[in-house]
Image 1: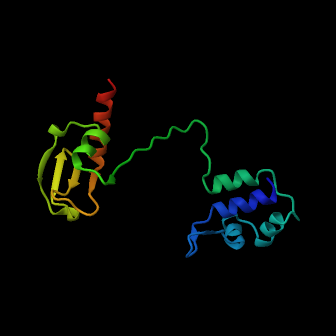
Image 2: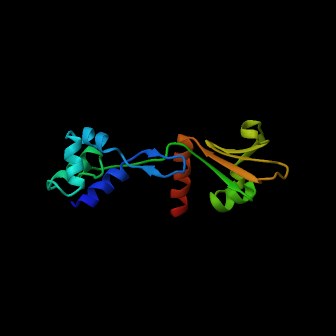
Image 3: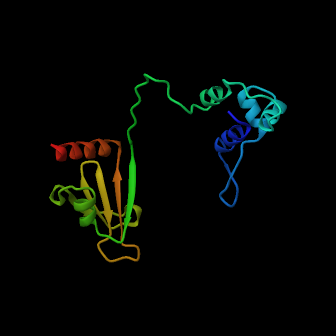
Length: 159
């Protein structure tokens, strides 16, 4: 690992943003605390005055969980999802985007999220406006169970 790569790691690990939207690097002091070493040691390594130990990059990755050990079975699922579509109507979203049958949805009035209509199929909710609006938006909401229902719809379409 070079001094440049070490500085880059410190910059990439930052979560602070300036008012202009730029990321500010993690301070050397905070980075040293997290890596359990002195600030002067970090500074000297970044300046190339001290040799960076061969295992230091691995220690950074372990500390910040930047890698996966081999053999770990990891599964991720979306547990709630809300999407907005603009410049379209609910029929197009249901039929062409979600690729679902419009007749499977029950439509009823609503007042949620400033929409006046809601089409529901189980835990999949599609909010829309009955009259033309400035944004012409459609909101699709999947609860956790709705995500599982949609997965099932997609599986059925694959067979």
